[in-house]
Image 1 (cartoon, rainbow, N blue to C red):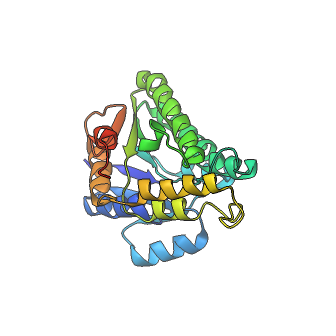
Image 2: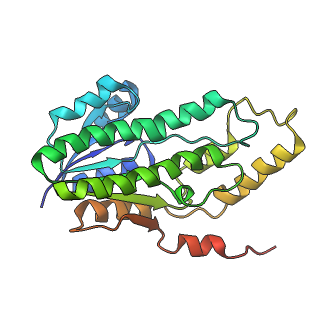
Length: 253
């Protein structure tokens, strides 16, 4: 059955490729992006998509979702941020929470209110393996994803009586470029030339941990599609399913 699916953060990565695949499978896909420039580029390259500029931190943009009768929301938009917690400027931490937590909450709540009225729908909240397992250097990002784990679990329980299904998506390290940018460029607030040597060691460890041996993002896109079309879901969906076991194995010296 064809569904109307809204995907945030569809300008690149998982969201971009899932939008194209879902449209190819006959779904009506509203692919939303942060800027007008991204919207123009995506619309020109993929006319099969309904493209809209929707910055999830902008209340006027979030209100745009009222024009669509949605069957599924894929809350995929997110921002990366790394750095030692004892050193990161608090404004950088607030910025990543603004997108990953408050922005995701705003769009999810808005969609949930509409779905409650029709007593049907599905909401997929994209978290991360970092939502259940935090490592050194990734604290700012992991903190936001831990918040999404709590949010998704509560939404699932509270919205179930209205016929609305909520699930979390927890990818491991996949080669979309997101991990590389997040690990290698925490911001110019961290100057390796003047930073404490211990902090530099933390960031070097992070780079090795999340950028080496990344997996094929096609597997995540496939799972997005499966979850959109599934008859029912589980709350937490690790990709790959054995990611926790993989990360627990000691790495060769």
